[in-house]
Length: 489
Image 1 (cartoon, rainbow, N blue to C red):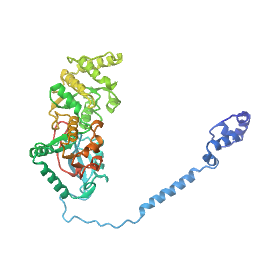
Image 2: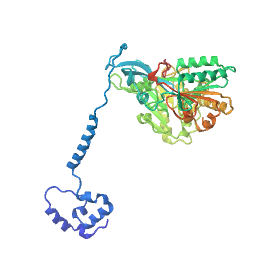
Image 3: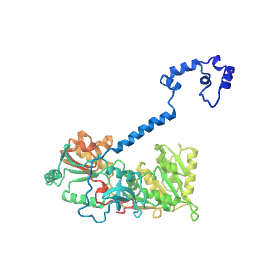
């Protein structure tokens, strides 16, 4: 906006100030001077605001308008509602008193790991989810996934019926078709039948699949889930010669080293409880634990750490080797040529601290890290004497752990491409959506399978490409079992 001497004539401005009485506000000297050039600039720059500048809406009038709007909105709730009848129980269910809640112990499985929960129920309907204080998988804690699962139960988009080629049908028709298809494949032992599930740890469901495979010995069961423990299983295979499940005792660890493992954002709320317990400061316990984090991107665990070392993803294996060498693992030969002096000093300081806490430390690798990093973490825990103290190994929780889930999927895709699959039953998964691009279960491959069955909670991408779709029950609507992080059923 151009500026002229007449607009900034301080003598004229002084005279105007002396003529004013009471409080007056302005945004600039030009506005106060009430120069014609300024008014012209306002109208040109903000034409919609020109009139409001001169005659704006007062606060009192604004409150009047909004108050009337809110009053009319409130009156919409005063419409007479249709009459509804309240019918009492003909036979009063035992234990149910209207208005009095009941609590049921349950568990939600996510990624094959169960969280023990307590479900609050009012008149037969779950209304609130909390952690079960007596369950070792939660100790009374819960996470956002468990809380959101209650909303999923009442999701109006959930599948509610059995569909055949997109049209509603009956359960009897579905069972008739499935029995006929199984009978057709029974002669060759079910050689053309394949089952694809997400990670299953339920002892009952695993037993049922074993019974099916006894009846149909040539059928095959495959498991695939995008977020899985393939790298951890392969790392254990490298370290021990066979897959193993690792259980950490963070409540007994004074020092924790995370190799890109976001332990605070995972599915295991027990680990968060244990870590917090060791972190608690009191008059009796003045020494708290210490957390070292090496990670490739910022995470919640990294944000909560005492010492954080950001590295490139490509550097993580060499970083792990350098740490293993510093902590006394034989055979670890890192290439530290690309390390900065700060990184080398960080590793040396961390290694000295962990060596001073042998048997009271934990080294944990993230699921997204390659198997070699997991194998090095196992070797470091062994060298520090943590095994049997803060680190415990158990049998894998899911069956066929020797075969990685991505290899499960690869073999299934190979059999589909070869025309060996006559009937595919997909339980609770959505592989059409979440399989990797080089192993995509797309329309072309699905059309090679004569009979496709999908059991799921939604009519998703996989359901659309299957002949049959059967609605899956929510975990709060059915009985079953599963396993916690430590194998507890």
